[in-house]
Image 1: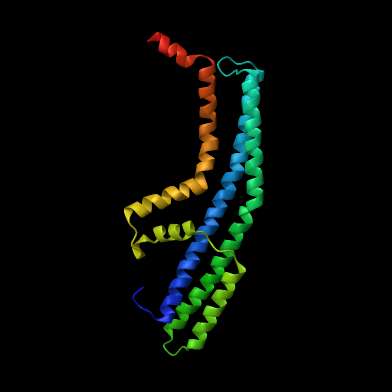
Image 2: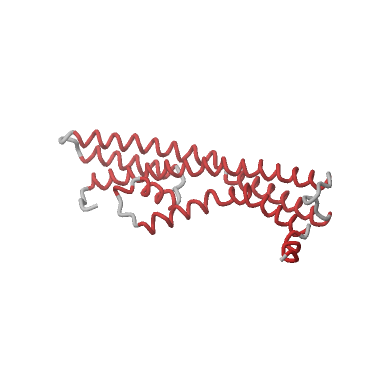
Amino acid sequence: MKDNNFEVELNYKLWVTKGARFKASERCEELDARYNRIVGWVSSYLIIFSVLNLCKIPFFTLPDNCSTFISISLSILILVFSQFAYAKNYSVQARNYHECALEIAKLYNSLRSLKVNPQHSLYEVNKIKDEYEKILDRYNNHLPIDLMMFKLEKKEYFNISILSYVSNHVRYFILVRSAYYFCVFILPVLYCIICMINSGFFFALNTSK
């Protein structure tokens, strides 16, 4: 920002904060959906793995102590993710961030309309600034990653390096999506690997060589 004009600075703050709060709302909505899916998927795996052992299906049948350990571990995962999602209450956070962004958007549009009139007063600008500060006081602040995701979305307005672009997308993936992909895709793979070890699959490969 080369222009130090107060109105330009306020316009920039409203625009950036509005965008970051919308991104925060999207992040919380995604987290809420993914945590609900995690509980559903892990619950399904708990039932499926238990049934496989009860039915004594070849290759998928594990010793009782191993099967019990897996069942308890999955039950703990379900409990942890359920409690964490309940404590964070992401659905409410998403709604609050969205409402905050809408309120700031109204102020942003008011300021833009005000600037069209060259005869507008500093009092009117200060009134918008005061209302903006009141809105910030009413809502929780967004996370730094929300601001970065907004900047990446509007990269034509910001000097974003390739390293920053990649690293922040990786950070977002770890923060929002990593737990989901681990539980949905890695857990069944781990179970199959345990079954392969138990059945002597790797030992058979070595002896065949």
